[in-house]
Image (cartoon, rainbow, N blue to C red; front, side):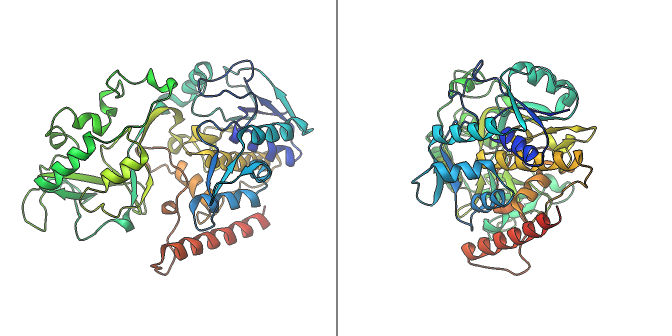
Length: 438
């Protein structure tokens, strides 16, 4: 019986391609062109909606490292991207329609792949890969919700994440409010002058425009209908001191530099067990990325912070993967049901495509009776699979590729470009060893 892959976006096409390359028959379901999501306009597969860029192609960048891993794993999207690329400096950008047409042609011409143009509203029995993306249709989302329970989310309200290494350690301090429990938070203390400067820049910063399909989930004032998901800039506009009684409240905390309670405090909470990444607590935001960098760098200790993910607020269907999935992207209580793409909590074009490669490879090995494949966490794809399946995570948010999720080198390298190059070379060498054992 053929494997059913639902969705012919980047992840679905990669998963189907990997299975086909292993000689396994696939039924690829795609509701276009009979039905389109509000974001999709083109009839072809692997449609790039928001941008035609697949990010940096340098090996010393997270995106460049991941793309090289994809090439070594036989990526159909990387093959097509190379044939349809357009000039974009150090980035890999493509002609959207030519790229989509080429991926579509390769999928349609593969003898092991049968394309079925219809919407799927119920999860089929048997071996299934769901790769329907962040705008999954209501019918299928309802079916997914039934098997995921409370672990299905329909909105993405995420705060920015910075690297621990980039914080000014002389200005921040570890402590929990009132000294309760471990000193779990990094605290960024601000005096009145610093706070007012930050406040005025925040309320005057430029917000990102909303897509039409997002607007129904925001009020006329521009914030989510859920009060707990309100953008920090909207909260700030309610009054000069509103944030000081909310996410920036200083009560229960003492600045060891002064011995006094600060005027306001921004708290950072660990994003991973290694403590290499921290998110800004309560800083869900709809500001443009450039504005986030400019304004949030005014926070004490964040002057030179490296932002590995900016805050976002938009419609996004994704599951709480750490509670549901194995590192191979299949469900813990239903091993023949896999998820791929942004629905799993990987964020971005290449991340979605890469997850599809891994899912297709994982499904193929299971059907062939081979041991499950686990990629080293020194590889970008291995680190992403570890991130989405880490059962210790309490509050899961989508994540794109970044150097912060990879293990540190044994030696300290001050030159960031050289450091990232060495990290990438280590990961690619480890990937080659893993491929030899497949």
